[in-house]
Image 1: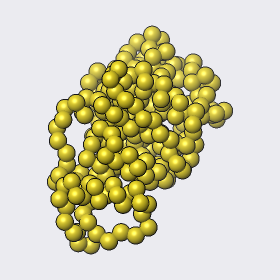
Image 2: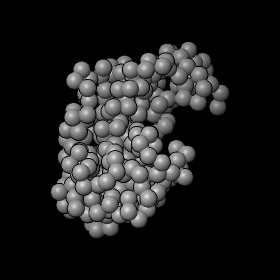
Image 3: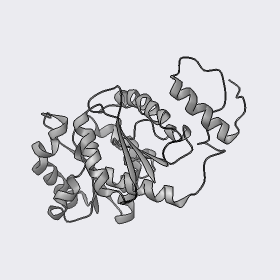
Length: 258
């Protein structure tokens, strides 16, 4: 099995955190290809930054269309999802949807621990979009300025643990989600300090991508996630043109009407 894992942020330090946790989480026979967004921001924190990142992620997916069995979009908030599922005929899994599914399987109410106050409204919208707002106990976040996106775990480890502990004690969380690629791998280190299951989005994304690929359920040849209809296009990269043609040919999609 070959999985493409994309860091929608432009930080190479965060990409290495993603790579390390993905390698720890993946099955021995899973081949991982980890890529960084070719443009965008160092760390996605707002809806607009997510919109920019979505285009970058689409380009990376398009460049590898036909080469991999599944894709993991490795930023909390799932930039470009679920639209990216229309681009290729393999499973595309976001770490938010993976973490939420994993949390929902392990408890009734979950809390999200985030590294930024600004990001919490967007995260709440993501949870609502998945229909799980009623199971969200809380979103707690770091309120101090970050020194560096690649060193959040070192700089704020005790703070993140304390936030998780408060979410359990005060908010009634049955499961904790450590949100965001900069926290990749932290769940393994702090699980013993938090009295409920702790979910890592990268680990959840990789393992659920493996599971969905392994299910071999088939592809979207119709319905809401089928490839976009054929229509005149202009200004797209060659990779995106090829990927769209490939997806449309695979599903037999005819000319659309604008």
